[in-house]
Image (tube, rainbow, N blue to C red):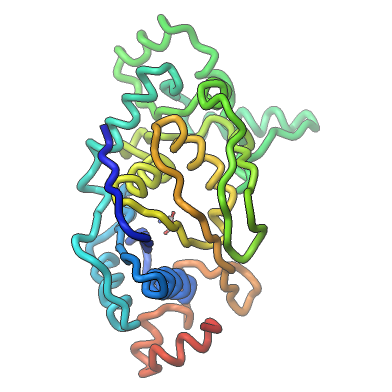
Length: 293
Ligand code: GLU
């Protein structure tokens, strides 16, 4: 069972150490920190490093250096996801036991080819809110016997949520309370728009969606403050929280910063990297003003 601490308002900044932090991260971190301070709450830091192939100790060190330079401090200990794989596995096992997830054997290439062949006939394959094609139904439709045979053969696989079954099991319209820079109030969740999402990858024993809901519960997060790019992902998080019996935090999805090219900032930085500001002897106050804080 996941133990859920009862505590005061608790916020978290949860970067992935797969690149250097940029001004968008600064905005997110400062907002979390300042909102926590305003209500006398906790500000926690979580390192989302389940993707061990892309996350590095150097990027992680950079996160601590950049945040300290910004004048932020957080409560220890920092939660590093790579140290908690058993917790995510336990949550996954709960869902497996309830028949709500299935092993997914198709490779990215196979999915791509299937979608391309379908679309070559002038039809359009359904896509999720991020524009990624939904996972085909082939693996969901397999018999139990065939699943067992493929698993026993040692074939590489991920675990995916059976969205239809999951929605039935949740058995209620889902909402979340939103207080951010986009739509606010009670937002109806639409997890079905994401299809059968991955909960555990073939190359990592968890996924972003699964670990984020487990960690928000374990860390007693009451307020999730993050960018509007994750607004729609909240639908999945509410569904998983409901299935796993986890508490519902309040959400605040904040504005995104755009680069000079009008695009969302990415980790390929240029002058938008926090470290670059430091190197140019600019002050944290100047940075705050650049991001209109
Ligand atoms: N690790 C995610 C990111 O760096 C943030 C996850 C979250 O705040 O829920 O974009």
